[in-house]
Length: 382
Image 1 (spheres, rainbow, N blue to C red):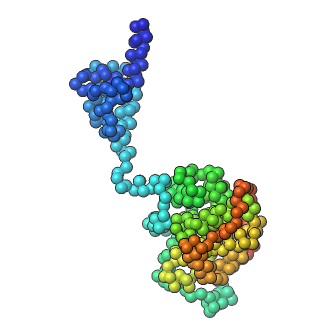
Image 2 (cartoon, rainbow, N blue to C red):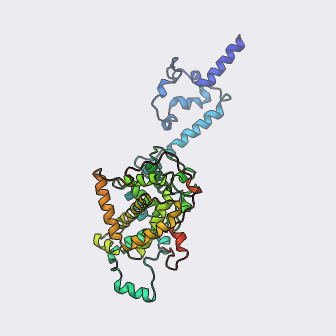
């Protein structure tokens, strides 16, 4: 009986801690019902190390036997000592870079405006180099030159297109998380690598591998599409169309190809007249991207296109976009105005989304770059 009693006493002592053996002058009242120390309630972990009871636990002078759980107490004390250095300061940058927070397009753009991109800027070719008759034709019959005050903004767009995805950059991670959440409706973060990105229309588990020819600008365009209240519904409907059981296509990969078209249109000065008119470059490029994506979705749905048609659709789309950018922008403007009034829907009455579409990695997708390999004018330096 004594052995049982002694065993029970030791187990209780290990469970509740040896605080009852501290001198009565320092020990707080013990709550028998809840088996906790009420004095410790509400005390932040980082402040526990300063409490007299905890100092008494490590002092042999109070009669505590250090041989019982001394290593555990010392480990706990070290953790408490480290807590202060881990607590972020109020309003610190660390709190704003948490991946759980959505990021706006303007915040993401500001990030690229403040970081050093000089090494990437060296690679850009702001305009297409023309020679011979093509140069003469462009000189006399081509679009006007971009205003000098807009060159820096144009170069920033092309420089971002040279940047890759850095999974170690918190802002890059937040951009990916925002795109994923806005398209899927998820409230939770996801891994930056994984099969779930294939569900959004990337070809593999790592989105960085699909940004060829468009760089991080492709992700910024997706961010713009899902974070602008005027284009969010359009983005969601195109994403829904991309999952059609017959007309499915890789949504994000298609978006990357449209960003490539926008980059080339900017370099070929197809957007110069509109940029000069608005005295802006980035908003014009964003709207041109959205208008081109809208046109693709309209053609895809109304002409019953499938993945096997992707290369030809993109080729025709690029030609139209470069020839009549103002026409595309006007169509987008009218469409968004009607959407805001509840008078337009990209999908209309199309209701064919019951069965799950085949996985995009099993589809053969032909992009702009693939078609351009056979054309001398189709190279994609940025």
